[in-house]
Image (tube, rainbow, N blue to C red; front, side):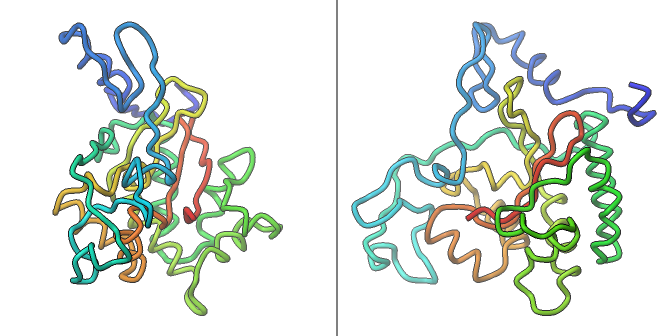
Length: 244
């Protein structure tokens, strides 16, 4: 562990999940992909499935009874699910992260403080390869230019992206595909959390991350389509982009 931070959090999330499972035999933790008998398939909380696992003839089942103050039955035939899905385990304590992941998160948070994307070059260069910033940015040679291209603002692109990064890293996160080939810590947890399962406090938290127009679209479609970020357990910053 000498190549990582001198101080490693004493308890990692995988260890905590395993310790929680032992006294409760037999038990399964579906959101983490663990059972006492072995590994089960990770539940699909991707953007194509979250919010509602089924749809009506006229559109996806959404998570609220009104959209912009109007009943859903007047919103193009959208209906309400009577079976609210459950979301995966949400974590908020960064000290639970493996040391290399904590180190990357700290580098990102520090780099965002001045609102200058150039300050994130160090975090990018901690990777062997730059993170993915989405297909629309892939043709730009410089990773900082790719980051700037993610902003919809004509001015203050650096402030916009740094602000978005700060907000999602301040939210809760989830661990997906535990012990699988795509094990990842994902921010914000909304990216892998069914919209229909959000409580009132979580909806308020979501409004602090997603712009007003994007929030209305999210409620209408049931899908999270704002920025998300993924870091693998070895501390590699894998991606940062807007889900489409």
